[in-house]
Each structure stands twice: as C-alpha cells, then as structure tokens.
Image (cartoon, rainbow, N blue to C red; front, side, top):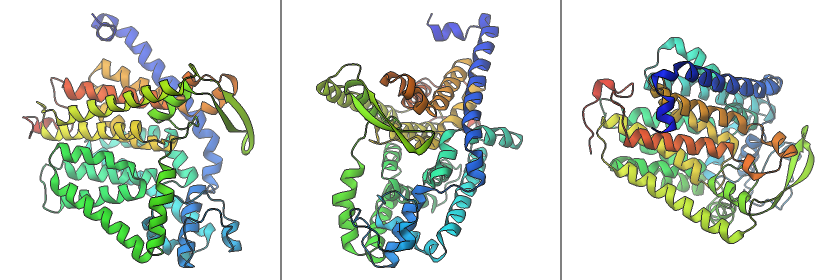
Length: 445
C-alpha cells in the first residue's frame, strides 16, 4: 500500500484532520502576513511601475515617437517623472491604451487600479458560476484568493495578469457551455488571440483547442492575432515599431533569466547547475544587496541536458494526455485539459514572475471541487497552496540560506498541480466533478 493510499485509509481520519488543518493554518498565516504588509500601499493606490510602461508607450505613440528606443532618453519632462519599466509588449497594447493618456498619470493609475479590482471581482463571479459553487462561499473564496500573493502583486505593479485570468475564465465558460451558440467558438478564439498578442505565453492554451478539435476557435485565434498586429501597424507607429518588436523585443523577452523570482522550469534548473549573483532589494526597492548563490553542481552542460529533457518530458506527457480519449463527460475532460494547459504554460514559459500565478485560480478552484470529496486530493491542493504562499518569502530566505533548492517553491506548486491534474485526467473519480455531474456520460472524442 502506497503512502498516499495509507493516508486516505479511514483508520487515520484524525491524523488526516491534523495534517490538513495544519497545512491550511500555515498557508493562511503566511499569506495573511504577506497581505497585511502591503495593505497600506494598496489603500494609498500604488505607483504601478508596469502600468507606467503602458502609459509612457501610449504617450509616445500620441507624439509619433518610436516605442522601443530604450537607450534614447525621454524628452518629455512629464514622462521622465513617471516610474516605469521598459515597454516590451506589441504596439497593439499601447494602441488600445492611447485613450488613457488623455488624462493625467495620477488619474490614469487610479483608473487602471480600479479596472484591475473590477476584473478580479468579475473573474471570481464567473468562476463561482462556472463551478456552480453556492453563493454563500463567494466571501470565503474571494477572501482566500486575495491572500494569493499573485493577486495583490498584480495590483501593486499594475500588471495584466488579472485581466488575462478574466479572459481565461470567459474562454473556459463559453467553451464548456451546455448549449453552444454559433458565435461562442469565434468569441473564444478572439479572446485567446488577444491574450496571445498581449503576453505570448497563452499560446499554450491553443493546444487544448487543437486537442479537442475546436478548429473554428483556432481559426478565430489566428485571425485575431494577425488583425491585432495589423492594428499595431496602422495605429501603433507604423511598420517600424512592429518590426522592432519582432527583431529586438521578442528575442530579448524570451531570454531566460535565473533571477530567484523567476519560477519557470528553465530558471530553476539553471540555478541548480550554475552559480549566480543577484541584486536583491532589502527593506525597500532602492536598497540593493548583492548575493552570490552557489549551484548544487556546477555544470552548464548538465543544465542544458536536464532543461531539454524536462521540457520535452513535460510537453510530451501533457500533449499525449490531452489527445487521449477520456471516459468522463466532454465538459469535464475539456476543463481538466484547460487547467492542464495553464500549468503547462507556467512550466514552459521562459520567464514566470510571481504575479503569473494568479492564473492558478482556475486549476485551484477546479481541484477544490474534487478535494471536498477526496482526502488525497485535499492533501495535494493544500500542499500546493502552502508552496505558493511560501514563494512570497523568497527574498528573506535568500538572505539567510542561498541554496537554490529553497528558491523553487513556486515551480514546486505548479508541478504538484500538474501531476494532480494528470492523475485526475487519467484516473477519473467514480462520481463526476461538479458542475458536470448532470452531463457525465461519455466523451466527445
């Protein structure tokens, strides 16, 4: 009998309760401490440096200036004073955000902050309806979701991650609707195309639609991506900005960085097999401390071998499982594959910052439905939640223990969810996963 099977044995019910409440308590404690520390900043409306990049880029378009001349100092004094990072998105996003430049930057950051808050609320409502959760649970679930560091990190930075999660929630809802209207596959494709143009990595979700033969959605996705780049050419500074994005920005943005907050598979393996030096903020973002992190085994060749093997393994297993017929209902299979696509996206994208983990709301709520009836899945979900809460504290850990083994809790969370979804996809439960219990007969494939 395996340890997991032994854990699920009725004889150990009290032990299970102690372990589960211990995991839950530790997660809530760590996550609450992280949230409390940033509440004053959130209440004061944060500076949102990433949104600053969007605002500056849209302003440059309004002044007919190039978007990607990062070495050229800004000449507009108003833009120089705006805290911002380098703009690395396609011209399409800056084009869409041009109306926001009509108001001052202090007003714009409040508008953007409000948009992100509203997007989070709408996302939670959509997911509650999708998984048919009782409405009395919206308070506890929204409260627990707020504890997810990726949620408030997105608000602090003014990032796009919550808005992308909203697009994913809409896509999944329309994809598994009991009655498919003619417009829905095309609407899903448009949403996926917009997500791909903004962040590139949602392209992994296209595998789900290919596996399920949703060819109208795939077609609409391709047309949307092409249209978005044409809009960028027509209204986003002409062909030169788009050419610069493809030749300068895209290669640079797809380059892996081993910085500890990067929790991609490639970054974690790189830290294991190469020594690195990091500039880490202490107390505040301007007080930087240089920390040398030694490798476990210094071997760039081994890093390449392990990285390549791990990527091929993860990609191959995921695609094989997605294409494999399943005995459960078509909606259940699609939802599991969609959640798998999200974990695949977070495993294989070269750069995965902490705020990207807001996309895990969908797999976590799905598996939460299963965990309510299975002690095994409850253990796995609670374990993944603890890991993602621990990821928030990587800076403090790095100051006192520089081992790369301690800089991989975010990746460990995603791997655990990926393995859990694979098990659920290949070993379905005897009773269907809510909300698909009423349509539990047979797959469409």
